[in-house]
Length: 304
Image (cartoon, rainbow, N blue to C red):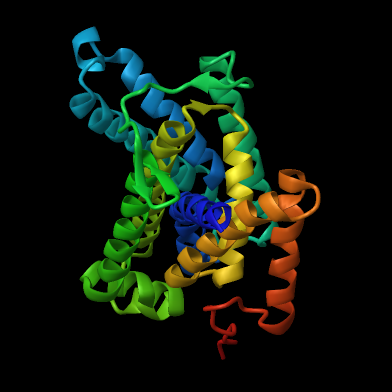
């Protein structure tokens, strides 16, 4: 029983990380119907951005976690936002109105470009690079379950930022503009909504969440590598589809489901962690067979 509880806790931590990335996928798709496959690499470069920020700090600040950690978040988020804004402006915006295949291929090209850019800056990026030890150490013990304090921080950040994002979209003026653009961009434009501003802000929000996830990933696993964007991007995209692409609540719920499947299948199913992708996609297929729009998605409306 203690093993099951521990794996459930590990699954929640995995889900919290995946949720931060999945929100970027679902928000961008909800606004412009684009699957931004480069978003996983935004998460990856943010992690390296946090590492680079730490490297540039004076030695006395490196030894002060209370200062170094927030600065790493600032650096990682800044890199993620810069990459996302440039990507939207020069890679995706010129392709609006084209066939959906064009931005999809562009996203794959941007993904490869970002990987190679990191490889130039960090030649050893294909191997695991140690991450600065400025995160809270030790565990939170709940009976037989031990949760690393880094995992606790990850869960708090993931849930808290998801609630803030959902509240902002539901209550703020810009949030209403984002929902209007998602429902009918032409009508929203006639009502005075600036679609370029809405789309850029959507990319920025996704990048901020990916930036937090990137720095936390390094702190939780104590190392990073260039493949982390692709691997976690697949999980996050699957979570967004499972929950219903375009639904914030769906992305979060889907992420926690993926996290639990990943850890429980690795512990209890034949093949262990080698087949966690298999069980995740089995569940995804079963859900989509009975509910093609995902758990919380809405059937696509055909505009007259």
